[in-house]
Length: 218
Ligand SMILES: *Cc1c(COP(=O)(O)O)cnc(C)c1O
Image (cartoon, rainbow, N blue to C red; front, side):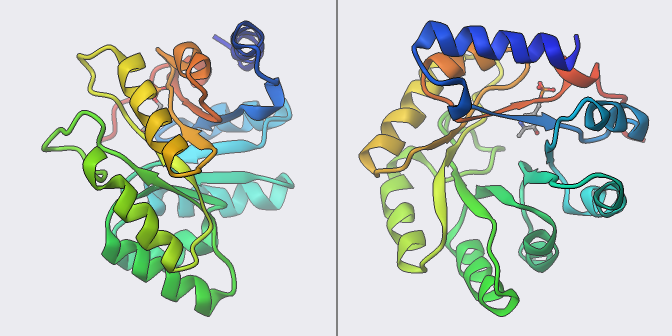
């Protein structure tokens, strides 16, 4: 598929949901993709990208930023505390704030750096043992903690379990966000972004449908 096909599908899904297209940000997930494929999408004018590893992103995006202006880079993978400073310097948004310790570290380093990316709390809506994110039952309290730290909290993010109907998880995330007065919803990937848009997604994270299948990392 191509970027323009995905753009068309987003426009249609937004129309069907009665939502303004402008309320939906397409994050093109470029992790592990060959650089020429990423450059091709940049050449088409797209500027919003997602990466899941700080180190991998540091290896390619400073170069792209010299060649293309206005890049909007989102971290969508787990963040280790010792990479917080690099993440704050490199990313415009972090979607994976998932524990109080990390929120505190971000608050401290953002203060030192004089800047802070937009933040999303990752919620483990499927309550899966291997997945990061706060549990739904702990979300309200964590939102309150982040706000007490004066962090620029924009919304919530989830990755539904692979073997479950994603819309149930999207609906749960939307409910948790609404009751906390948060408007950002980072949800929906290549296989399910249209149902995410129907349930209020503001940030969809689409990788393989734009770039093609990811080549396995060696
Ligand atoms: C890789 C990844 C995506 C994109 O997945 P696709 O199925 O290729 O669209 C979205 N979100 C997260 C958190 C990811 O790690």
